[in-house]
Length: 220
Ligand SMILES: Nc1nc2c(ncn2[C@@H]2O[C@H](COP(=O)(O)OP(=O)(O)O)[C@@H](O)[C@H]2O)c(=O)[nH]1
Ligand SMILES: [Mg+2]
Image 1 (cartoon, rainbow, N blue to C red):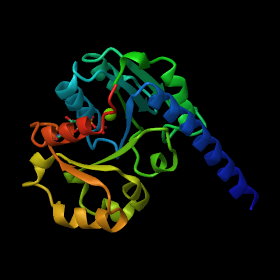
Image 2: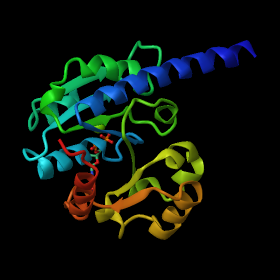
Image 3: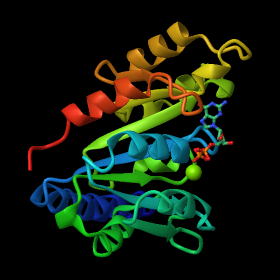
């Protein structure tokens, strides 16, 4: 009983900080997207493609979460200047970003001059589902080589998603991934998610995602 109270306390504190973060994003009319997936599904590639299509018309900042290393932040830093790296190793929650980390990162981003903040969460389909960061959009990426059963194994994250990206569509001829089966499994958990099958490698399908994202942008 006591343990449950403690866990609930952590989640309540996270909710409060997340609400504060959301208020800061709203105040700056800045759209925030939390990008989640298993390691290697294509979060960094997706962020790079999105920046490539929207910048400089949409001014983009990036928060890069990783357990260790600055590899992704360096890649993103080549094409965008507002990048903050968070390494979660040694922090109380190392398997996901939490609202406190975003609160600290926001102080280091020029929010007055940004329209969109993309947050790359730690590669994991379990922990990130537990922590609201104060984002407006939860984007869950699955990639075709992972198989089409992931919504059955990790229902919480798919149930929360506003956007489900099916990445690596270029590999569909080579892997067993049934898009209809996958879509049905997500729909059973979540009737409102928007789907974008695409390939960050070839760029196919990226325009549809970017057009939708632009439609979500608050007017400055
Ligand atoms: N074939 C193919 N490979 C991709 C695609 N998107 C990403 N990759 C590759 O998948 C690997 C992991 O991508 P990355 O963006 O680092 O994934 P992350 O760990 O989720 O950030 C890299 O080798 C990418 O080049 C895609 O659409 N098709
Ligand atoms: Mg990455």
